[in-house]
Image (cartoon, rainbow, N blue to C red; front, side, top):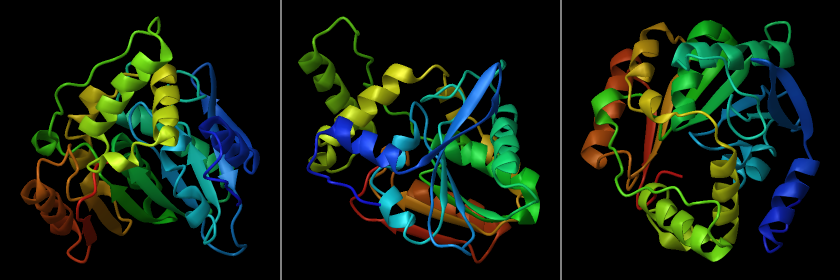
Length: 269
């Protein structure tokens, strides 16, 4: 995969998408959109699930690196990005079944895969892993939601009015990214602002109530895949390192050898 990170954000997204195969699986009255970047033959592929109010572009900085190692199937979750709306009511298990059905279509014959799941996607990925059993070879949770009371609610997030001029909208997105996504504001570059703005404009499913639930905790007893965790030490949703370590302890109560990394000075995204 070739990416000119100095190009305009719209061009970065367009050219990276052009190097993928766009795929569709059923979702409500429409389709769920996936992008496949092909990696080395013979390696178990990875399924990547993004966070709330996101799209495949939540992974834009990591796709080129991960695709060097294996084929990636990167979703637009139901009701977000280019995917169709999901049937109501929006519940974790129901949404995850749409995704799991899609994986079974894209990887027929019970082909194994690894799951890598960010934030809200961690809840849906855990239910998908529970359904697929040993077929899901590993479940990597990155800043995952669904830990109930441990999820810290970030205050001050606002939604810009589409009627505002671009500079004012970008200013709101910058502040939201500072509050929610980045511990180091140097990361809030034009690409991050563009990706975030595009994803917010296309989000049609309210994910907060599911993120604040114990949906991931409910699925854990059913997950047989090896689980790992990656959290930013300054993740604004984490509640501090002590609460992040509580998540580690919960995972290790089910899998004592669960690998768990905390990256100092790093935020949610």
